[in-house]
Structures are given as structure tokens and as C-alpha cells.
Amino acid sequence: MRQRENESVKVRVRVPVTRDVYYVVDVEDPSDVDEVSRVLERKDPSNWESDPCFYEHLGDVWKYVVDKVQKEDIEIV
Image (cartoon, rainbow, N blue to C red; front, side, top):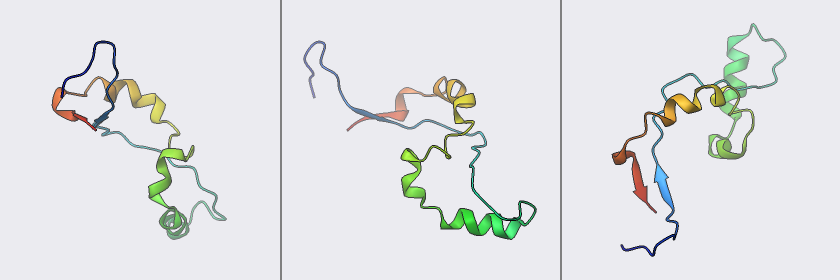
């Protein structure tokens, strides 16, 4: 695939996130691990891209993981 000069190309990048990601949820009893697990199970993980709770603290590690991206992590879409 040839691209014209100054033409952008959409790519999918595998970002090797290996850090903890924190998630904010509402629970009645924060000490009840079962309740916390049930609340997390009800979350739809397919919406993570638009869920601001998912991103809490991710910004703290973003620079770290971006530095780990390698050429084989990138594919043209």
C-alpha cells in the first residue's frame, strides 16, 4: 500500500499495558469483596473506551507504556 506524501494512515497499535488499572464503582459496603466483584461483573467491558472510570490512573502510566511500543505492535487498518 503506497500512501501519498502528507497523507495520514490509520493504524492499530498494541500498547503493552502491564500496570494496574484502577476502576471506580459504587458499592454499599467497600469491605465486602463479593459485592465489589458482583458490581464489577455487571460492568460491560465493551464500553471501556468511553468509560471515564476505566481511565482513572491510566494516565499515570501512559508515558511508560507508550515508550514500550515496538514496530511489530503497529498494523495498518
